[in-house]
Each structure stands twice: as C-alpha cells, then as structure tokens.
Length: 103
Image (tube, rainbow, N blue to C red; front, side, top):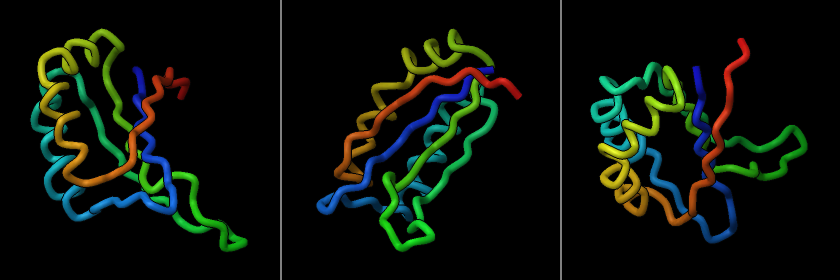
C-alpha cells in the first residue's frame, strides 16, 4: 500500500474553494482512478492551532493506492485531466509526497 499525500500550502493570498473541491474534484479523482488501484480518499481541512495560529496547509488529501505502480499507471492515464482541474479550486500550488503505509 502507498499513500499519496497532496498538501495545499496556506498563504495570505491563497484561496481554496472547498465546495468545488469536495463536490467536483474529489469525485473526479475517485471516478478516474477508482478502478486503477485507488482504494480510499481522505480529505482534511486545515484548522487553527490551539494557540490560534493559522494552519500550514489549507487542505490535505490522502490517496491510498494498492502500489506505486498502480498510481503511476493511473496518473499516466488520467493525471493530465486531474491536475488541469486544480486551478478551478485553488490558487496555491500543491505539494505531493509519496508515503509507504506501515500500518
């Protein structure tokens, strides 16, 4: 199992349309990649810290894939469409990290 983490950094000028993200973008990801090894999608919205500090990330998406090869095949097939949709919901540039699931 591999977990792809997509982090959307916060900044004073950054915008993020959560309604579009949850109602259009995430269903697009699930539809295109669901049969290609995507097992689960979890979305986290950044919250203020206990001391009131702003979050480092506006949103974080966790995409569980059966393997790195499955993600690579899915991205090759539909990645261009999915990545082209990003400007429709945010002005920030996502950071992508690949993680090995240990548990």
